[in-house]
Amino acid sequence: MLLVPLADLVLFVHIVVIIFNLFGLIVIPLGAWRRWTFVRIFWWRALHLVSLGIVALQALFGRACFLTLWQDALMHPLGEVERDQPLIQRWVMTLIFWHLPLWTFTTLYVLLWIYLVILWWKVPPRGPWSGSALSNR
Image (cartoon, rainbow, N blue to C red; front, side, top):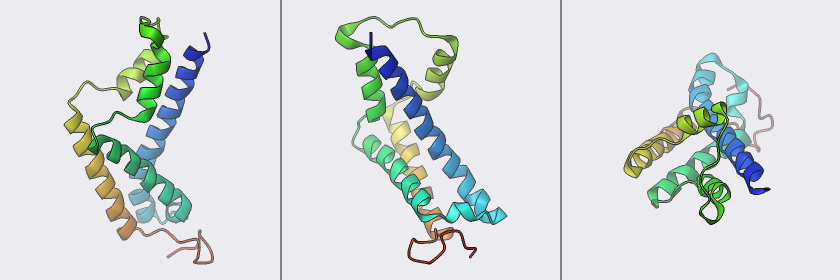
């Protein structure tokens, strides 16, 4: 069935988005301290801010991540029972989907987004208008 590979693809995209968001949260302050120029690239920082902003907004509106909803819809069409998953996929699913109340995630995502806004101010990106996006400050 075509739906299962699509569900796996959505899971892969979800993992990439999570890694991208976590990477940025860690590397922006570290890169500012170490004077890594790539942490000031405007388009990368803007994409990171928007990506985590979407996550926070979905949580504020009480909605599950649209990637989670797509994956669920593809994994369980017409109420099918869950298929046997390979060990690594079960492990990844356990890491990504925690069984906690929604307000926990909402609080976490909003606080992380506020942290990113503070980082935008403390470690400002070089704008596309500044000549060189990779020049040191």
